[in-house]
Length: 313
Image 1 (spheres, helix red, strand yellow):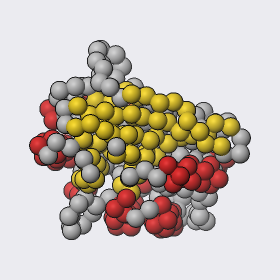
Image 2: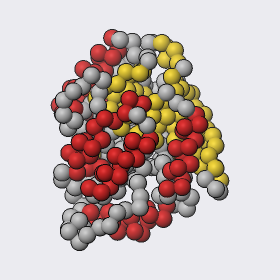
Image 3: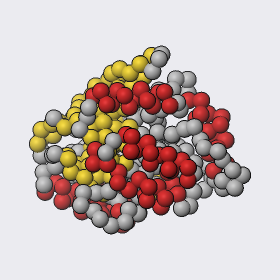
């Protein structure tokens, strides 16, 4: 059995020193949010406990679905690079960027340059930029496909973007990996389900993403952004596809969102008969105690006409 761990929304802290020049942009909004809320609830101790538990479980691979930083300051991006180096070897850790990693114009390019080893597809030797997504990594019988929805947005907005060129590239990768009879797991930051987040945080291009899934199929989608441990379903080519979210990896008790968790996904079976099991593990009490929250069988089920249907954008 292949075992994949999944974390998201790290929001590494504390913030480095911030100058007035740094705050002469959208960053002033994020800085106020950090001072009022996130610095109290996103803690290094909690994140450390989550990572220690993951190391104890010794999964075959780790997926990180974005928002490693807060304001995308240069010092934050450098710190995240050091954190990734401590987290694991690039071949064992796959990262996709989130909206906070592209918080202001230019930040996305810097993040790509610094974090490239963890966002590079197998055998790819080119530059890591928007055109390098989605990337493909094959580990055993699993295809890990990293999609980027990260783009700088206006103040008070946190939307993601899934454009046609990336959709076309994703379709080709999904077809190629299907021919190889691999279990296809798509990693993306913004949840590709309707009503998963407020309008100012939603994925623009969600209808396009759903169209790609219906035409080409996948076995699982992992996302972050909502800070919620969710499970939804979207239509695939031959069967509905489970869409799995996760709590923020450093989230403590007392906020509006559930405390920190990580997902542990077991993949077994073969093409046409994959068996996926999801175990959520996270904070269960004081002193950063980590334990099992729930275990779910990700067997396909029909989506019907509920709130997770595709939304045209």
